Image (cartoon, rainbow, N blue to C red):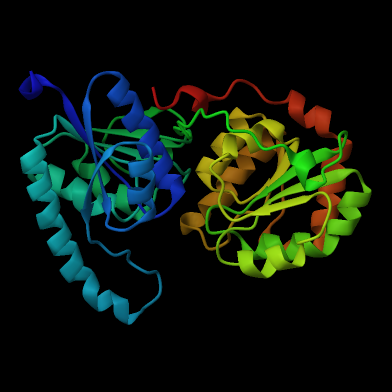
Amino acid sequence: EKCFMKKIIVAAGGTGGHIIPALAVAKKFEEKGWKVLYIGNKNSLEENLAQKAGIEFSGINVQKLYRKFTFQHIKFPIKLISSIQKSKKIIKNFAPNAVLGTGGFVSGPVGYAAYKCKIPLFLHEQNSYPGLTTRLLSKHSKHLFLGFKNENNFDSNVPTTYTGNPINPDKSIATINFEDYGFRKNSLKLFLLGGSQGSLALNKAIYPILDKIYANEIDLIWQIGKYSYAEFSAKIKNRSGVYGFDFSDKINSIYQQSDFAIARGGALSLAELEVNKIPSIIVPLPTAAGNHQFHNAKEWVNNKIGTLIEQNSLTPETLCDAILDMKQNLSAYKSNFTDSVHQNAAE
């Protein structure tokens, strides 16, 4: 019966924003009795997360195309060609019914190999402005699924469906008791999330105002991220009302306990905040391709569920004002949330 089992390959890599949707959809396929293979970069975040999720993984070796010139570019064509060859080999051996790419540079060679092997290719784009991989592959794909309602940003004749963004499939109920970290019973909990890498700009803006927000009955859950964790975790060692971490596998517990948030404008973070109905102050990453984080954030502002600070106006003072202002109007923001499309996007 193994021969008759339906099979799909999912491919994505680089950041959690591409990987989490791929894993969420992979889990749905497994529930429906399909066999799933995840293709990603060797020794990467996606390999680590796929293994944690119990999904079979095959590694290739591909390199991202950096936006500025670097000598790494010399290796790019060689790695690209060999990763397309390797992907073809994996596809021929696994013999899938379909291939799904959810973006990031890793899904490029896999998607192209699928097209060359005549396997139906499907794509999911998380952002309001399509990434390079989606733009290059869309003309070879059967169908394009969109995280944002924005089919006019795609200049292809491929049929599109607006599904929203598949969010973290982890429903674990591992909880954090924040009172163990000096949080007060009746304080508001503010969650600062800079993504898995962390955000130096957000970290530098929040640190000088910790006393002020504490005095205003706000405790801080602070995702410092891996890059500046050593620096900031040392500074907050004996502080009450601040819980700092680099990466957490108890993110569901954090969402459930957060009253409001400060975030970048990444599509996936915003989808998770929206599903959990958490009003947010959004500081878009200005270097994001097509300025897509700014457009993502504008939707929140238009729906009156968040506010926007552009990075060139971000200071400890402007951030503090935004926090206290949101605290003042929290129930109004909360009442503007409706049921989120992202809730059932994986399905």
